[in-house]
Length: 154
Image (cartoon, rainbow, N blue to C red; front, side):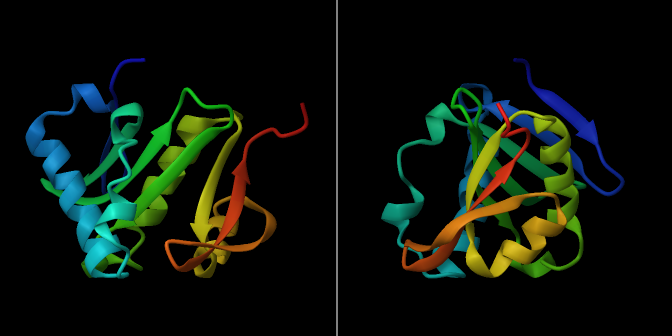
């Protein structure tokens, strides 16, 4: 797959293989995730830097030249794994994360996808069309739920 860029009403969104990210873009992604997960939520850097980024496609959502949201996708997995969804804490609840997730959902289409979502965000993901499956579990000392997307009736 080639890099895909799409213009949303307020965001420019790209999805890029890890190997095709330049160092500056990768650095910006890692800084945003660090601010959201490590500084903001107290997740250890060891958990955040799990060594899986080189296998992922990375979603970058920009407002102008500012990276405001990111996610990573493991497209070679079945189901596709979606994770590390991070929205800059300064602009959370402004719709940027929702715009990015609408873009991710459009990109996924009917393909099956799964994520471990923080449990308090379940209502938000549900409004975006994701469905919870299973019980609450702990991941990085935070309650999570498994959420699914796409056609699971195969």
